[in-house]
Amino acid sequence: MPRKKTTAPAPPSCPVCQGSGEVSRTVHVGRKRRAVGEQTGLCLNCLGSGEAPTE
Image (cartoon, rainbow, N blue to C red; front, side):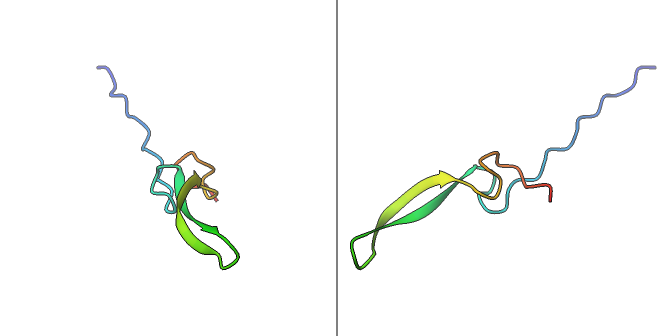
């Protein structure tokens, strides 16, 4: 009787970026640091992989 192959469970997604690997940061300009928009960048919690860190 052949055995069923089971797949490994998917790793949990990063709680900071919700698995996308990118986070938005507000962009400030001028001496008064006026907010003008948002810019996406690499998630520093998971380093862009989208998976939750192991530690």
